Image (tube, rainbow, N blue to C red; front, side, top):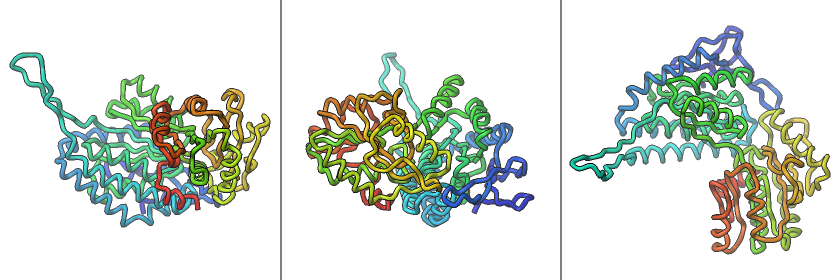
Length: 455
């Protein structure tokens, strides 16, 4: 387990640069608290700008060799990593549960999904090819090569701590790039174990470096790494607010970014839907992992002719589906504040009260919202709650459902519940979302596993 004892006897997640643990400065050690128990479970070493510069330098030096490494070497590295994920399943599961208070089923899903991602990346690496396009210039031949871009700065979130970081790291490394992983301060041990597995699998020094920073230092160290000449691309997964800042900073330095931000994902329930199935999937999509998923079902748009029956079924599903636990008091409080805003302004609560049990577990809540309500009047209309709640809107027809669904600053995922595939396809093409699921949850997990994640 990648924990190191400091001179005060604390178990600390270290910073690792060039496959070496950095000395721990006891003045820059910060606690990780389990929200469920309120106890400090371990600590982490916080990086400063100088340390981050060394990590970027190590990634750049390693890139000069790693970019030339044979495809077979990179593929075999990932296959060894996948094997170690399976062997160290319990380490990864326990770390997630300890740090983020998630359910065991959610933690296990993260590891199993990550293993599949790794194997898929390993299988695809040899298919990365260039082209020989035609040219108008006589006696000339043009070659287009696909080359690794350089060191990545990877900033993953805590809510799916294994799968989202693994996906980013694996894609970068198997492509011949190197990486600096800025671990989340809420799940530093989980992210450190991932890096430890890559090193155990044979990842050369400097190919994967890990740093983490306190919330107070996060802005300064992130900006320094985005600006660092050695970093050539940034991948960030998190809130839209932080994504805007990172995107603007990267643009200032003319660096490409890959951003996966928040969502206000709508599930549209049409008048010909299987209502029992739709209610079950909507409830699970809203409540899985305490609603702390960017793909969570935040809005349900239901047609008036079946609204009463659907709402009754949805309430029954909410009654029988546990809400889980928030990762921290601040995350829980933000969700409570949004629900309180709705209550104070007269929104009708179909189920729940938007309160909590005093231990970072919010009561599952359904709020009925008038489709004409503006985001300026009611926060819940277009602000991500990241909690176990959902707002319900009643509309007249398909056209109004599409207009309401598209009336959002977000565009991540959506779902349509109907027994008419032609209708679903037509409507799906008008929805301004990256993914549109039919008769599925907005959270793209198999129904069987989604059920496990809400038990």
